[in-house]
Image (cartoon, rainbow, N blue to C red):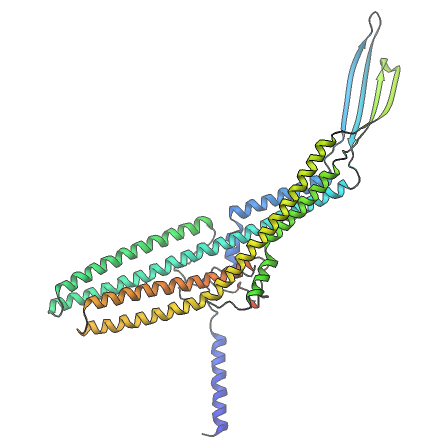
Length: 436
């Protein structure tokens, strides 16, 4: 075959492989798609409560913009009686209103704006907490389902082998004690399967009690391969810190309390009340019109309130620093866990394959009479534990990577799109929930 013909065949094969890959269905995700997850999160009581708090903050902002003072109208009708003389109908009326000093209205508007900002960020953080909670409960459900699946396969395996051992006992190729041992192992496997199924149902109840609007597939998605966390740790940590609503809410709270402290300091000079007063005495024979000016005096009390508000602002600054410290620590831990999770799963997968191969060889040896049932029992139990460890490590790895994406707001957030976060594309809206 000429070199040109060989090159042409290679090109055709590569092109065919690329065409088949293009026609392949999209990879399934073991996590719920974004559309369903967002709908489930938004209807949780925690998110709805935070939304109500935001509505209250917006109302309070309008109230502060309008000001704390109202126009007061006062009318005092009265009758004057003079001893030995006539009686007179008299009245007096007053209209007054307190007036904010210059600067107080601006501070009130700033307080209202900061309050709305805090409530908005707390709503976003409640949504983020809901995404975290959904991921944890969904992962628990996946782990329980994987464990139940392995236990059920083990029962089916021992039911098959028990029949084979019973035939061998009938033919005289196996001792009665082998059948008794197989019966005991089958009973133990069935008990383990029942326990695993109970744990699965409990995890399902916990998941649906928190997210009743989340539809679950009829069969549990399984077999997904964990993805490695692309990008640098510093990039992911920086993204998480930059997008943290918890940090943003803490900073907004600092600005809110600082504005409130300035407002209380401004209140050391109380707002004056201006009014117009009209008097009608002696049946209209005497009339008077006057201006009313009143200013409350309470310097010591107002100074103490200002000091307390300043202390609250300092406390908020310290709290914001602690929040950033804790979020930074959690982010570094989550990224470290996610980067190591796939390697841990690969080691468990290697161990599971080796244990399964060893159990298969011993099973063949037992069928040929070259080993006893005790060796088969030991090999089966080792393979079972290895499979359970591999399944648990697989879901742990999926959860660890998803946790970083959730914290970086690249998964189950309204602004999620195809943009790269930490060096890795985070869009997930195209994934379909498998029904395997």
